[in-house]
Length: 485
Image (cartoon, rainbow, N blue to C red; front, side, top):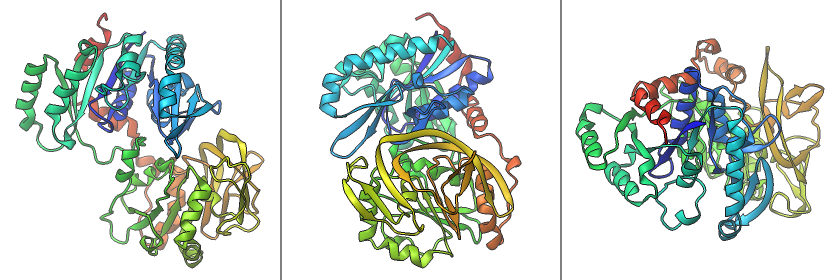
C-alpha cells in the first residue's frame, strides 16, 4: 500500500484541509484512497454507520474520498474532559479516562499495536492512504513515545510533506527549525506553504531560498480561501466560525458560547450563507435581540446549565420566545427541559433533580451510563417544505418524548419543534443544504431576503480540491508518493 503523510510545523496550519483536498483529488483520479490519522484529539467526533466514534476530520476526509468512514481511519481518539483528563476512544469505543502522564506511560505499546492493526485492515480495502499528522513533529520532549508523526510515517513506510502556515508569520524559521529538530528528516520530500495572501510572485525569492537552504522542493503555495465551506475540527477554529454579512437586513445568528462547548462545527454550515451574520455570546448581555439564538452542544450539560442560570439566561429566553428562533443542539437542546437528573455523575456533575429552563413542557433528561451513539435519518417539515435530513447522535442524556417532534425517523419522533423553538440531538442537522434552506426560508421571507436555490451550489469538496491542485506541482506529489521507500 502506497501513501503520503501530511505533517505541519504547528497545530492549525491546515493539515486536515490539505488532506481533505488530497483525498478528493486522488479519488477523482481513480485511486482507491482512504484517510488515516493514528491519534486524534477532539471533542468534535464523527459517528460511523456502525455507531462508532472517530475524529471529525477523518469522517470529513472519508466523504471527500467518497468512501465510508471506519474506525481504522482513526483508531485512537482522545476526547478532553475537565481536570487534565481525556476519554480514550479505541477503535470507536470508550476504553477508559486517563490523564496525560498515565496515557503516555501506559498506553504507548497498546497504541502502536492499534496503529499497526488499523494499517493492516486498511491495506485490505485500499491501495493508497492520505495520512495526517498531529501538532508538530518537532516536540523534542515527546518524540521518544510519540505515535502521531514520524513514528507513523516509519511504520506505514510513506514519505512526508511538511505544511507551514505563512499567515502566522515566521514561515522560514518554522520550516527550517522544524526540519532541524525532527527525527527521520530524510522522509520529508516536499514543502507546502499554506494560507498565502497577496501576489504569489512576491514569494518567489522565498521559494528559492527554502529550496536552496533545505534541499527540499516547495510543491506549492496555496492561497487563502475565505469560504471553503468544509467543516473545521481543531479548537483553534472556533474563532473562525463567525462572520459579518454585507447584505442589507441580514439575518443575525447569535451562538451561546458555553464554557464546556463541544461540536461547534454544527454552526459552520451557516458560514455558507452570505446573508447571515454570526457572532458569539459569552454573557446574556451579549445576546441582544437576534433572529436566531443557537445553543450548541456541550461536554457537561449541567455545568453549562448552571453557568447560564447565573447569567439569568432563562429570563432572556422567555423574553425572546415566540419572536426569535431559539435552537438547541444536543446538550443545548437538553437545557430546554423541565428537569435534568444525573444521579451517578455520567455528565460530570452528580445531581438528582436539576431544574432546566423549562421551555418544553414535560421534557425531562436522565443521564445514563451507556452513551447513545448512532447515525440517524428522517424527515422534517418547515412550513410547506418537507426535507430529508441525516446526522448522528452522541449523548448520555435520555430525553422523554415530546408532543411536537421535530422529525420522524421511521416510527420514532426525535427532537422538538413548536412556535419557533427547535431542539434536536442530531449533529450535522444544518449540514444538509436543503434542510438549512427550508429552515431559513420563513426568516428570509420575513426580512424580504431572496431565497436561493440549493441546486445552484457547487460541491465544496470539488471547489476546495480544485483550488489546492491548481496551486501544486501535482505531478511531483504523485512522483514522491509512488517512489520506492
